Length: 287
Ligand SMILES: Nc1ncnc2c1ncn2[C@@H]1O[C@H](COP(=O)(O)OP(=O)(O)OP(=O)(O)O)[C@@H](O)[C@H]1O
Ligand SMILES: O=C(O)C1=C[C@@H](O)[C@@H](O)[C@H](O)C1
Image 1 (tube, rainbow, N blue to C red):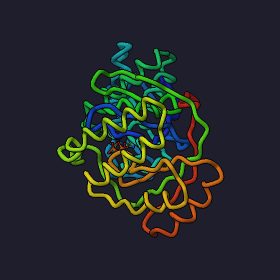
Image 2: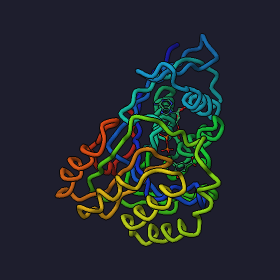
Image 3: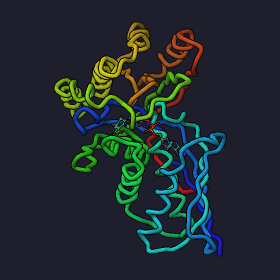
């Protein structure tokens, strides 16, 4: 017997990186990671691959399939393939998108459903088991799964708040990678008192102020330039930040500023790309 399943989940941008205080906030964007899962009785192991990334680390998606099968007591093996519009290890939650898409595709393959938060928690567990995260990144996982803007407490493993908002998102994504597992946690912890202030702003719904404060603080702690943020502030953008552990930056903008910011950021450097997208309020989906 062969079972197949297909799904996608979203990339996301950062409002508050949770590494300083374990409390974070993020928004789902309209960039998708697709997963195709094929399961058979003839094998007991799962083999993953990432389209166009032959050297990519596939342990996260393999573990994600295993945990779903374990949950339902199913003994099957097979393959999982992802293809992604989300640049890998750039701060745009490629890991959360890959885990969530894989979990939904596995559920699709076996014809099962589960409570959405249970599915999210399996993704967080897979990320912890495979060492791609510091806090479990529940904030990123919820933004990727549900879309919209979320606030989460990663230590309590709780989604605190979710809001929907129509805004454009402009992303400056340099060509290089920065793995969350290798980020500077000690420096991130040093900025905790001020990240707490940004977190309060996020709880009050002041997402753009929260995000910009987060951006300056983490650029300082992690040694990223604030020039990209300053270029955005200069034209009136209110919400701009380093995303996750970098190197990408993202900005929340109204339609009228979107094209201007794209043009300005495109002139800022050639070793990367500028992506014009929007908040996705619909979230992930089986296909
Ligand atoms: N499309 C994908 N398919 C399979 N695994 C993926 C995919 N995208 C990311 N991963 C896994 O996630 C790891 C990168 O995780 P990391 O947390 O460093 O990046 P990120 O989630 O993009 O960044 P951030 O958490 O700062 O937003 C990769 O090494 C790989 O194991
Ligand atoms: O690995 C982690 O725990 C995290 C990584 C970044 O994406 C952060 O933005 C997130 O809040 C937490």
